[in-house]
Image (tube, rainbow over all chains, first blue to last red):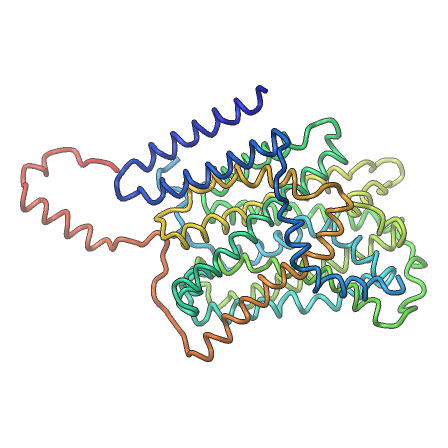
Length: 80
Length: 407
């Protein structure tokens, strides 16, 4: 269970650096969006690390594009 | 390191962008692609590469046509001008997801290669994380640094490729190419399919970098990219010819990293042997360039879509997504090959050709052209800064005696 703790600590340090470097009011957009992406990244990393069920984008794309690429692959593999 | 290192208002030369394109094409594709093409076209794989050659430049013509209409804007910026603010943002989001996945897949390629060939006992997450650290630093320093690194790697890469090719002449067997076109031209035509998506469709990264080419070099840009496209086609043909000539069709189509395996065959009188590590070094360099460019474009497009003043704060948060994504993207090497050679071509061509071509057609129909400044972050004119300073000095003359505050 050491790896998740290290990961959270690392994310906290990076979050602190982002917060500190974008402390001015006019940089609040940069700070907000960076921390938002960091939180998504941390959630995703933890899910992978703890082997939770994580949606795989390659499977999404394969399913989405199946009507297009499968006939092409079938044609390519014909007679191979 | 300067606080402002890595801002996007940098300039690169047309030669540098041509070298970046070449390294991007060689990164990951050179080692993996020839075996996929050979698996389809067999000993006529080199003909597939010859047929695919012109497509390297055809796709660039679309990007150059867009760049002529919007010379100072990146894809995220002119998409908003062509299809409206929100339409442009949705389109940019498509590209962000594309480059996010591409970054993860490129990172996965390198960790697969390292764990299969060089570091079999090292966990993949460790390889990914350490590689990503270097990429983060490179992207943090900006496009000029990446371009200069590319110039160094280009020279070394060409030398190593030539050494490898010349060292393999004694193993070359022309009989491996027989019979030529045994199944007609259809089979080499089918072999073009994986090349279109990997790497040709991925060349769309260049749309985020084209506005950074310095003004004096714009005349030479088209010519430089043409030379680069020819060189990419030439090297692809050369690799495929030597792979089939040295290893034969069966071994080439089975090997996951064919060029690396081919270099293992180098043996000149038992003196020059085991030089495959040179291939590994060059390949790691080219993959570094490809990944750095992908992460750079990803961060820049995101920052431009969200109207941020810098892309640098986004790099580290994105690394937290890219590394775990690379670990789960492929279940195994077979899955990676199926996805990269089957699905990816369509997905990549959609982003690399269909969307930019649609943007170009809409821009032509709606007569959209914009030569406005697309600097990112916006440049504050020197005159204005000077005027503000003198205004301040007039208001508070005593301030002149004090040390200026550094920001």
